[in-house]
Amino acid sequence: MRNFDNLEPQTRGAIHMATASLFFFLMGLMVKYCQALPISEIVFFRGVIAMVLCLVQLKVAKISPWGNSKFLLIARGLCGTGALFLFFTTLHQLPYATAITIQYLSPIFTTILTAIILKEIFYPKQIIFFILALTGIIFVKGFDLSGNLWPYLIGMLSALFSAGAYTCIRKIKETEHPLVIIFYFPLVIIPLILPLVIRDWVTPTAIQWLYLLGVGVFVQIAQYFMTRAYQLGDASVVSLPGYLGVIWASAGGYFFFDESLSLLAFFGITLVMAGVVGNTLYRRHKISQGS
Image (cartoon, rainbow, N blue to C red; front, side, top):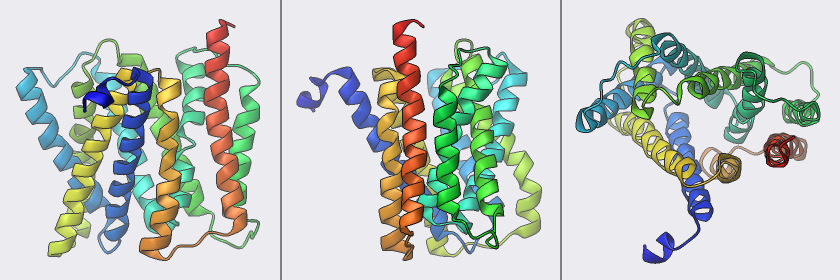
């Protein structure tokens, strides 16, 4: 541990982010194993576990859970709800690596939304990376027009909702405690999803209860490591190891679910990653130049 603490903050941040990506992968693995359960039920228990953990943390820290910018906090919760529900849907309908890759479009959409809503700097050449990433999705889907497009469109909509949540967080991060921002996610999602849970209820088996617990616990651990990563280093640097999730998902899909991807799909995944990572690095370079 002493040797780890002696590493540069950027390096420690990158290691934390890589660890976060592993736990996010494990969360997705649990969701894949819960395919016999309704999506609403998985999302609901994800919210309940998050609610309990957040309330305990808020109590220990003696922080009021209600926050100041309630409109934006609720908007963050609504966007997060849409993103999670749709992402879990794609996990049930697409190969694991494909679902994860589409979700990684969220930084692209975040750049667009923050430029429009928050008036953050947008560089025209970033459009090249956007086109590259979207072209990658076309290759991942394949050129068979008779195939089902809906899971891919649902995945892209999930990424857009995630971008909406990130945009809200960007706006309120200076005025709201991180625990309050996290708390509003289960606060919104539980009452929204409860009617669907009651309507579609399926009693989980013993092993499915463990999977549901894993969904909630693994994502909380992942969020801890992700938060520490951003505290330790520059966001544009420490975020890059997070894209290891595609590798975890490709391996996990193959070994646990017998999912195999075509060379065309792997090429598409490479294009998406090149577009997303290229956009991050280019933006960082331009900002560092002060241009």
